[in-house]
Length: 90
Ligand SMILES: [Zn+2]
Image (cartoon, rainbow, N blue to C red; front, side, top):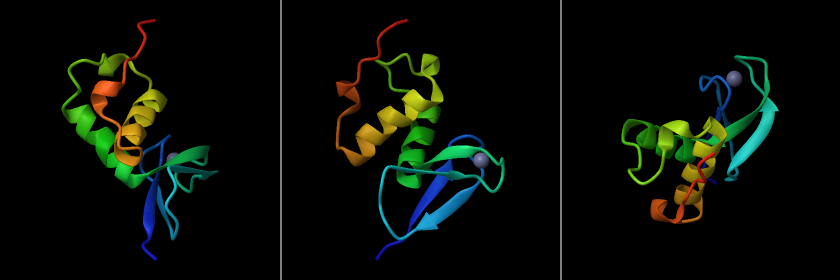
């Protein structure tokens, strides 16, 4: 069984490993002490790639971090195309 890494979505510093593969966990962080959502590191890698090279058709900078993770999760774990995502203008 492959171990998966999950990263704290609050501080982005703390990681834990688990031997199962889900999109996220909710646990208390050992770094920032928040009961936080821990993001699958595959999803986090995609998030980081989008941060470096934002998708052109999305207003990436305006998205909340949670929305960015949602989009990244859709691309990495659901095989969706970034083109599928349309974010409503507030
Ligand atoms: Zn944390």
